[in-house]
Length: 119
Length: 108
Image (cartoon, rainbow over all chains, first blue to last red; front, top):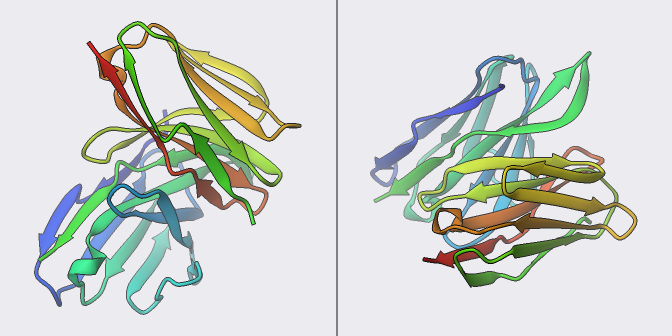
């Protein structure tokens, strides 16, 4: 079946550095991918919608200059956390809806997530 | 604005018990997902529903569109079912709103 992968699965970095997280759809094309963030013991929150070939759409309160999203191909979206700080430590998850005949189906595939720890 | 409410927030049960987790949402949706999140964070998609009922092994998911309500049932629960179960509603704008999750702990 369709699979969405994320890389890395976990990362530890120093404050001030940038971290790139990849989200790949492995056997289907995803013109749209969604990025979520989950703080400990809290619900998943949608951060942004990544659109292939165009700018990402960010949710209210999410800084687009801090969380850079690039969706350069139909199977890859990247989220770069720039100048990361300890408060950015979180669990980041992507998902991709599957298209059928050019129309979104209801099927949404989730990546396994990336745990970011900023020291 | 779509809001997703889950109940209970926490549930502890003995092995073998029948488990029910409820989810209510406030606006029209195109699909509802039930997700399982294990310690460490990895998410597994259990069901995607737009109507009726689905069954997979010991798991059953139902949805009532008119009442804007869905339930996840686990029959013959087992300690390995211990996880956080998350209800997620996909709105007609394709955005997904997540419930806060139900933390299930099955005692052996």
